[in-house]
Amino acid sequence: MLRGPLTKLAGTVGFASLLSRALMIAQRQAPALAKWHVGADGVLEGFSDAPAAEATRQGGMILLSELLSLLVTFIGEPLTLRLMHEAWPKLTLKTLTPRTEAQP
Image 1: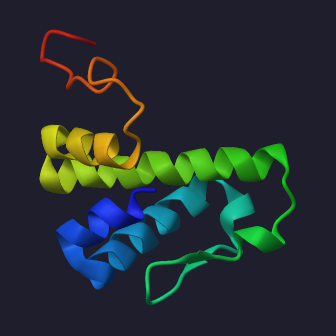
Image 2: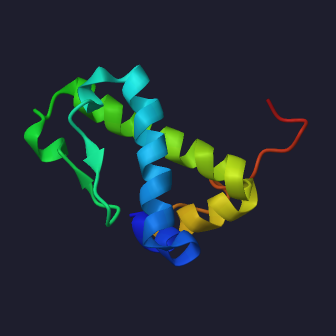
């Protein structure tokens, strides 16, 4: 879902690079992602071969978390939240409100 908005922002190569980096980080935490890889066109491959086990689902959540973390690092939280809202419009803006320094 984030592929469209991120490709508009960074291009196909930029998106593929960012997703590849997020996958590399996520694989350290979730060995179930070892067979996953990112194609040159930014398409995530290899996950259809994996069993639909809880470890694979958790690995996918870890991958998404790492991708969003990298986005926050590179483009900031407000723009990341706007991209998330573009990808998932049913999320409310209240849910996507940036944290302030005072919040934990």
